[in-house]
Image (tube, rainbow, N blue to C red; front, side, top):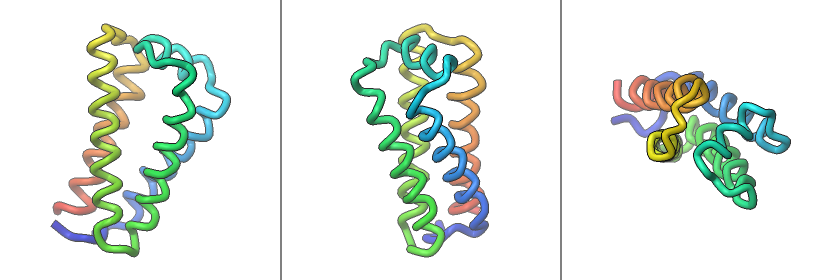
Length: 119
């Protein structure tokens, strides 16, 4: 395992997607509201997802230069989307948001981890 990414642009791309997701979550569009309501995530806690995604994005960017930070942040992003996937399955909310957004971002974050830190 490498401590800095082999391909810097992969974690930068994941960071960009997470930052966009965090920005969208400030005033969530219908598909995000439907997703969070569908899994039963309390509205008074929605702000935490913005913080988590913004911090993960920052960690991925810092990790391009600081050994270990990016791999740790990337592992956290994978864990986040694993938990989100579990929440969807548990709530039986398996609509398009689950397949495209949740599993899509889980696959992307796993691929970034593998090709940035393991290969």
